[in-house]
Amino acid sequence: MHPLTRRRCLLLGGLGLLSPLRGEETAAAKRRLPMSTIFKGETRFHAMVKKAREKEWAKLPIGERIVRFGKELEGLPYTNFTLEIDDKIESPSVNLNQLDCWTFFEQCLGLARMIGFPKEEYTPEDLLRQIELTRYRAGVCTGNYLERIHYLAEWFFDNDARGTCRHLTPTLPGATRITGRKVTEMTTLWKSYRYLKNNPDLRPPMRELEIQVEKLPVYHIPKSQVAAIEPQLQNGDVIGIATKYHGAFCSHVGLILRTDDGVARFMHASRNFKKVVVDQSISGYLAEFSAHAGILVGRPLEVGETVTDPAVYQANLAKLLG
Image (cartoon, rainbow, N blue to C red; front, side, top):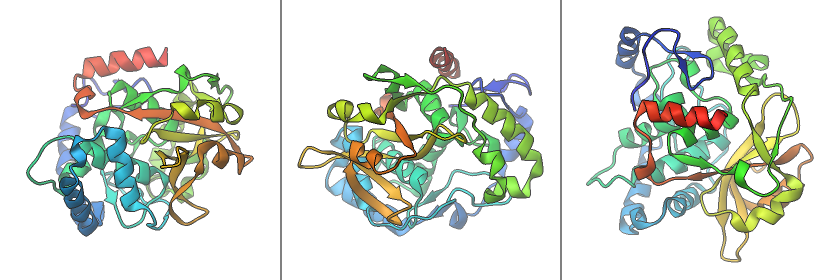
């Protein structure tokens, strides 16, 4: 998918992010961080790909592929802020040695998507391309930090519009819209984010972006209703944990893994356990934390459903935003 660049003030995804001029995009595309910075864990990558090939995971539905890669990452250490890799240049990145909640689900999805494209050999570049596709607004990164989707609630909308993950939440029984939410985490805690700390000029447009995220029609399944919809959840479903507090719509994210006992368990990179774990049922997990209000649900789609036409993407997004 190519970025939409009719003019400098084109709004990407309707969320107020200014698109660079074509010349600026070309210049940004030529800048590159070293591979040693943007890809960590190459030995593990090749071992997982080898296993996937031997076990013929590519023949499985994408949800099944996702959880198999997730199980390969089980036990790896939790580390926060793994996406903050430079002071200036934003880049797709992979870290298969240590993960936070976002990079765990995202890299499982990326690996599952990657092997959906038949190839004799897969390289780190193949995974980085899949990460770029789902991590960045409109699926493109030219080096600008603001191109990254920083709030999970927006991720569901943008990836639905691009045909990579269907946002199921509004269609599930008990779905309730979250209203009056203030989205301020990035600009309030800017000292924790390397790019925002070192680039004060990014903070005002980040605040503008947060204001647009606040306006999204975000629905969640309240925690009291989650047990009832658990039978509808599938392996590989992306589960956003809705918070009852201001700052963001979601405070955590993971995947559904349905184990042999039939339980829809929450698989995630856990700050409490300090590693990737297969936890209790998703409803049981929610009950452990008073701050958790419920869940958002996305179902990854096969690679053949990916939207590559920018006009279709924009039309899809407009429909989702209502």
